[in-house]
Length: 437
Image 1 (tube, one colour):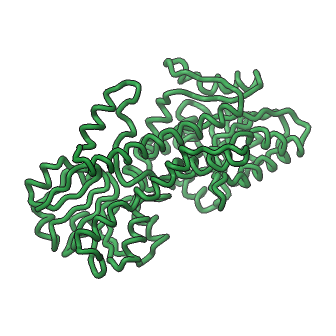
Image 2 (cartoon, rainbow, N blue to C red; image 1 turned 180 degrees about the vertical axis):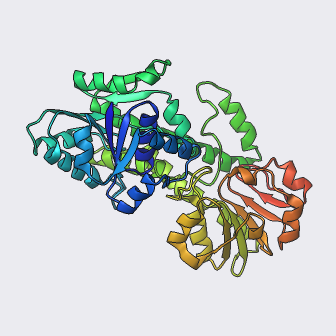
Image 3 (tube, rainbow, N blue to C red; image 1 turned 60 degrees about the vertical axis):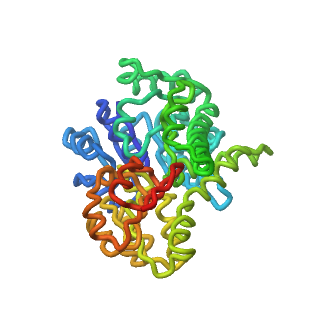
């Protein structure tokens, strides 16, 4: 099948590459000429494990191509996926201007029946709005479908090729048949496709992400309480997760959630609720707890240094909001850097993947190290903000030689408590006892 993807951000590029891998001819459209030219030359504009190999393979097979010309792509395709940004506005609501602008363009440019698929995360009722915009520009028949994505950054290729389920919201039998054909390679292997109405499909995405945000935040609250009563959150987590009604995933405590989805989607669902005179009290509490959780270690750092970090140099391992991505949107590292700088500390950071994205925001407000151990040279303490695999088994002897103080503040609980203890480090993590030298 011939498919157009409008938008080559994280969702659009992974979706387009996946659909090409499934044997479709995919035309990716983006207004950024430089980006499009780079992709034509095999440059993947985002970091995502295993994406580049699949990307290049489908370019070489001529199933994946790129253009800035929407009409050119539309004329070749029966199905058009909208994978456009829906950033939060000042009030937290999702900004649909990109989605509605392209809907308007499609209405003006289409010359035959199209299935317009909303892949972007959008509020309930967006399919109706997209339909209204297109219908105002054309009399040609079309259908609008909601088909939310459930990709985890860092595991997007795995998730896209082996989804737990495919959700399709549509009231059109013709559109349902076309979507079923696109996803037949999945359903043939037993992956379910769940058909529902458009509004239920739109809400499914917000509900899923918001629930996971609540789950993470609840575990962070439990971790903070563990410290008060002397319990160990790792043991509590294992005990809870063994209950198959709860499960082990998203129970790892740390310095809050970030990224492109959870913060934005929680805000948007809260705002959508208010527009209907409904208060998502649990989501409002989740958001407030997460804001505080992201910088919970700063007070611990101050406490260790006698109440002030003025003039102290802090090494930071990790800048991305999570491992295996270069995404720094809503990253806890940035909140901690901002607060520590305001309190007079100096930051030396290391993240081989996300560094360039941070430089675009912070410039020379912090220093950037070439390697994880280079960041430790004569520092007063180490702050671990991202759970990159390279940090999991460090050379503690080398760390001790480089650091002014053998002090670690671990926002991701990277090490069993006995490891820093055996190496003579002061070690403060989340929800576990503090190891004092």
